[in-house]
Length: 375
Image 1 (cartoon, one colour):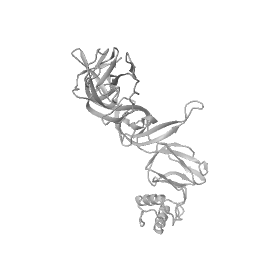
Image 2 (spheres, one colour):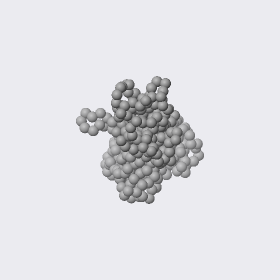
Image 3 (cartoon, helix red, strand yellow):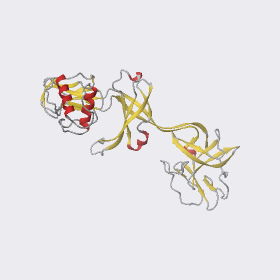
Image 4 (tube, helix red, strand yellow):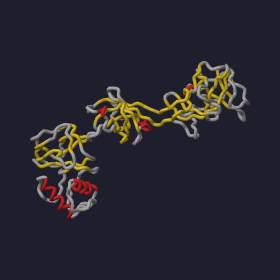
């Protein structure tokens, strides 16, 4: 369909019909309008073809079977999706060292920077903030983002005498020695793999996957954790990706019917297994929506919610039902305006399509006009 700037709309204009004699035909719910070479519009309706040679406001021979009003309103391109209120993605913490699990936190407990996530052989495995997972021993000579994460955390915990950068220097070594002494660890100056767990921020323990006193081997699950802020996870079909943009504002309807404002913080493409035997995997769009410290969501740890996404909005525009559009062979659209028991065709430009209505503009088109609706 033609837009105000001439680009194609998501719903393509029906293909041009071949020229036929006799009675016209309704295609895709739109009355097709043909054009004679070098002349004006020629409308096809239930009685046949109107005479060519008139301008864009050519009168129709027969009044339409139904009518609708041109209204002024705010048009929102919205879509509702099922969502789940929770704490966002769940991450699993696994042991990287052999030993015996001697302490575990409680489910639902929040862990902050520098605190123990669990204890192995009565020595703490500590949480630090960072976006690079631990994957090696950190010692003098090491360089990289993980070194910078370690140094930034040590600085935030009150240790100094070194520069926060991506190089593990002798100054870093001395700060690590002091940290190890404070936490009751062997003072080696080396942060061995498995001593710290990096997460984006403070975490909430989701579930325990092991028990105190249980022997552990590298790779064994200990617990799962999430972030601490309430978020909504919503999934959309791949073709609806335009609805979920990072930073977009949404509305979340809670189980009690109350609505709260939200904001899309992350958008990712996920592959889900198909339903049923031998079904193909399905590509979905997963959006994380932050609702901040909403009082309405207090006390809800897990709940099914509705999320309303808005892709675009047009305020105070003239709209008509999409079915009222008459497709023009020239590539645009028109409306059959009914006045004083007679009708005439008016060329229009289309804007936003939403909720079965479309934004329209055209010469002389005003709010309250009556337009024809084809069968």
